Each structure stands twice: as C-alpha cells, then as structure tokens.
Image (cartoon, rainbow, N blue to C red; front, side, top):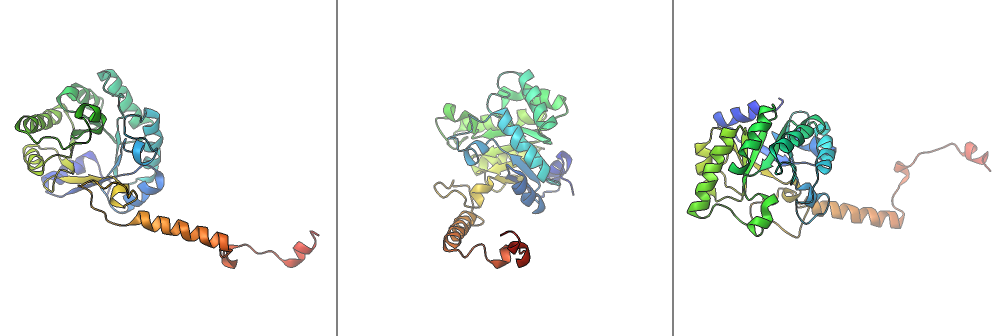
Length: 275
C-alpha cells in the first residue's frame, strides 16, 4: 500500500510504529521500498556519507535535487521526504516556498523536511499553504552545529527541554504533519510524543516516539570509524563488501575470473577466417 501523509498520521492514531530510513540513489531506494519501510528520507546527510563532506553545510539544492530524483524513481510505496539544505530556506519565507517547490516539482519528493522550531514557523506555514507537506526537525539539528558547538544532545536542562516541548507544539500548529526528534533525552521525547497529535520520529530519542529513522550506512556498518550511541547495527554489510572486493581483486590477478561460464563463445571456423 502506498504510504502517504494521511497513512503516516493514521499510524499514530492506531498506535502503529512508523519506519524511516535514508536513501540517496535508485538502487538503495528500491531495496528499502521493497522491504516495506514506510518513509524514505533523502537526507542532507548525503553530504557526509555520499559526497565526503565534513558536515551537511556544503550540500546544495542541486545536490538534493539530483539525489531526490534518483530515489523517487526507485520508491513506489514509501513516502519520499527530501531535506531542505542549509540556506535554502533560512534566508526568507519566499525562498523557503520556492525551494520546497523545486524538491516536489523537479525532485519528485512527496514532502520536505526542514530544521528548526519557532523561528521557522512562518516558513512551515507558507510551505504547507502551498500544498507541500512538511516534516519538522527539532533537537540536534546538524545545520546548526556551529551554533551548538558540535554534535551534542539537546534538551537536558529545564529551559532547553521546555523550549523543545514548546517548539514541537509550534511546528505542529504551523502545519507540519510529523516531526523528527534527534538526540533528545528519551523522557523529553516521550512527553512531546504524548502532547502532539502528529507523529514523532526519533533518532537518538528513545522508544516512545511514534517512529524511528536511521542513516542506512550506519545501520549496515558501512562506516567503521564512528558509531553513534543511538545506532544499532543490523548487519556487517561494510565488511562483507570489502571481503567481496578483495576476493574479486585476488581472482582477477590469479586469472580465476572470468571463468568459462562468464565468457561468450564463438565457432572456431569464424576465428580461423580472421587470420
């Protein structure tokens, strides 16, 4: 069944958990879609995991459009959500609506995601007024890492926790149909989830959220240098890939590949006529 904004919202009412994973290309989107994942996020995390940037700040609208188009072609049933990259919406409400529209019209996403709370309520409202569904993003918002002083858990004090709860209500009232809570204490996320009528999707925000999201490279162990606390590794795919690459290298060097079953034949008399 095709996942839509309505089915995602209905999942909260029926207390069914929502699943979301990132994807950045056609083949991975197709696999995730066929596995029955509800939502695919074309995250600006592609800057780090696909393009090799140190953070997400260098990701452009062109980067997002390129990858979103590919994912949209591979996802048939999953709801495709595209991240709005840094400075594609912060500059003005007008820019926010225009760039959100590009992700829908050119990228073929079905929704957009943007970071920030009350300071972007007008942006969320204007985008939704343009009939573009919005997922809000609160807590650790990577585009604000310079302001935060790094990747740190958010909402640990009374003041910051209260602001998170208030911001969640504000983005809901502005029209967001779901909100991602990243690196938020589990009890704060639980309180927000109880207060909101829209689904919460957690990443490092505990089990009480209405759904969960992970970066697929993290959950498949495709990066061995760093493992965030909130990541569970569901397969050592990175090691399997490296083993396969090494075996391929060895067989090519030894002459074991390609074997006769991997080659095409021709009649000897045809070859003889070439001499």
